[in-house]
Image (cartoon, rainbow, N blue to C red; front, side, top):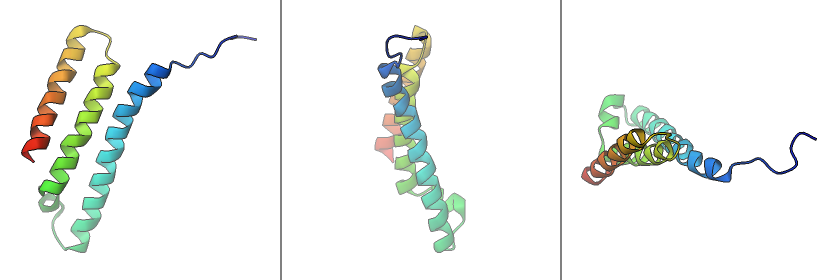
Length: 95
């Protein structure tokens, strides 16, 4: 037997679920607004500039930033992701 104890790092599973969830939200929002643009005979660019998409866009990047900050190895990298998270929060509120 190679391992006698479970080797799943549950913190890693938890923290990586944030960026995966963020990208899933982004993909779902883009897919929905792509479909909506076709239904309303709008250009995709017009549809993606709507506040509904912009809120989901920046909200998803909050989750991506949390996941990437949690998996960072160095302090400067974590700090950079925290700045990105704060920037995303501000843009979510503005949208």
